Length: 203
Figure (cartoon, rainbow, N blue to C red):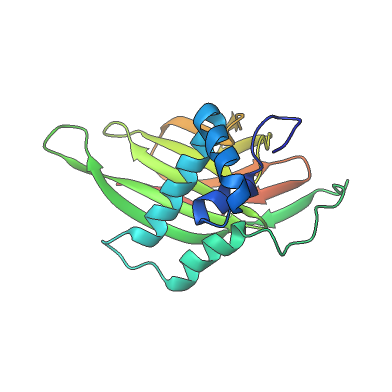
């Protein structure tokens, strides 16, 4: 457990989700998850993300993709983290998953499509959920997996506007009132800037 934040390390949560946690740690981790809303939410969201990617019955997800998700979070064989560099990197995120999921639409008789997009970059998994909120507006919710309290901000840019959202303590961000069109997304962190392939918001 990270003593400075009183939260479980993210790799500890992923080990628990994967069933790799040491037997002598299970009880302690379970008790912490039962008492800590922050860590419990991290566990829940990780389980949901993995479930979408490997248990979706409407479309077959390539085996390499589900394996990569788990491999990303298997940090046991990775070298210890070194001191952060003062040089900021610019990194392009790779698209790994893009799927429309049927959901209740604007009226009870309509079916809208919620879009789930997943990207990977370095040790991060970044998820976007694009949800139609009205006839011409969407909400974009995002989450960054891989490090707690990551901080920083996210920029969403189209041909007509540029908006910024802060990354909260749960490594989440959100944009409301997004119009149909082409968008570029970038995440500005302490030591790197992550850019994303252009995507289109549409029905």
